[in-house]
Length: 441
Image 1 (tube, helix red, strand yellow):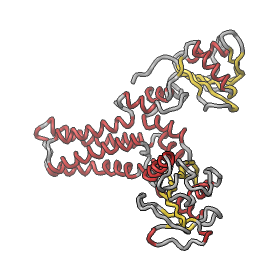
Image 2 (tube, one colour):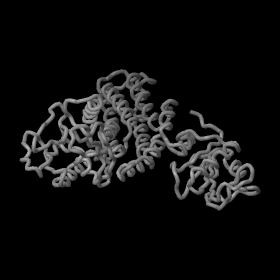
Image 3 (cartoon, helix red, strand yellow):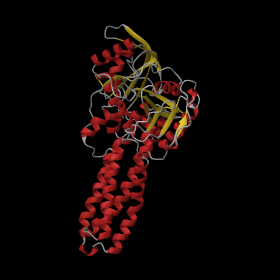
């Protein structure tokens, strides 16, 4: 993917009205284009200092009274000349400024194009570029903390170190290819395999912690399932602390699943209420029940809500993490031991709900545990390929295979690590990554 030379522009703040809205320009002509509208006629203002200016359109009419700042190349986010206009956060004003800047020679930026240019200019590796979108999307302190570590280059720097260690082993293997008298003997193969062991262990550590890292970013999905009128929606509302789901005495009130993201003690939890399970009475309810079963299958923590006064347990569901033994206020007895982990609750009075929430928080905390920063699916897939190549190389070294075969696996591991940090990454992969960014970032 080549670095484009034209100048791009976009609104860099979220949609909607606010106190401040930012328009960002980047490219070789950014300062010249901005100057036409800001009155920068003879000398440019001091770099990296906000100064007051008036933005005027092509007819000389003042669009907004604002603050402007310029970042000369290469000391900018993108490595190009960048100008930011900090105006009033009215979308009409911001869009009008963008339209004027386009008329003056800029073009509208694609989603993620500012960060894409930063990556192509070498300001960020690909893991850091991904971290920008991850940090913006984080909805919990835990997720934001992990994204900041990723943005600081922790994963990228670690992958570079792993690749260098593999390069050093490959150099000895290549020597055996180039010089027949340097053929790898069993003792030499064992020694090289031992040198690969720390690399293999670190890749294994990153992979083992991927699920926890992913949960820190995406949250933990807690799904409530159970028979109709078991009290799922009431319990859902209790756990949220608000009346989110409709609750009526009529069976089958919930026809589709509802979900709400909450933060519990720094952990993002997506709480899901599902349609009651029974023999459906209509097409809409049938579809809702099918979606309930699909949600149950995709749950990180499955909570089966059972009416303790008239218990019905669906054996077709996946094994639940916990049973919420509901309606203890109606005199329901203790849950049978055959149910496994069960917590008595009353969604109507709130009894036991705090204990259930504490239990869920503890399990959610366990789900996000770990120190890996390999949080994205691309990281997992790449690291699995690296692990497979390293294992094949290790087996080749211990089995005395020809150096050419071992070198092939070591080069494959290096290439995959290079792709993870953005070296020789296929263009379609880069396009897919940056297309998920917001416009203006």
